[in-house]
Length: 68
Image 1 (cartoon, rainbow, N blue to C red):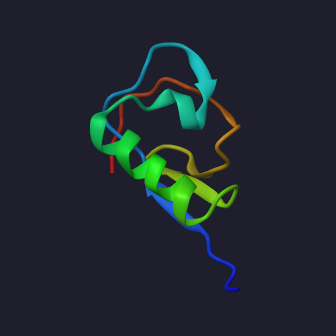
Image 2 (cartoon, rainbow, N blue to C red):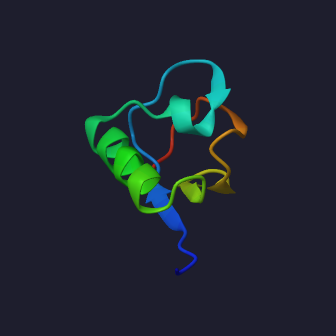
């Protein structure tokens, strides 16, 4: 068994307010990639944010207006 991690890029579409990183991004492409990451490496997926860098999925993040 290999130890895999998956890093998913943030999306442009975000919901207003502060949310866990995995729930902040609402774009179709981000959601599809996030679901795939959960299959490929359950519990070992991270998000790369244009503003905050590498985020844990449960890390609270406020809405921001930047993108990769």
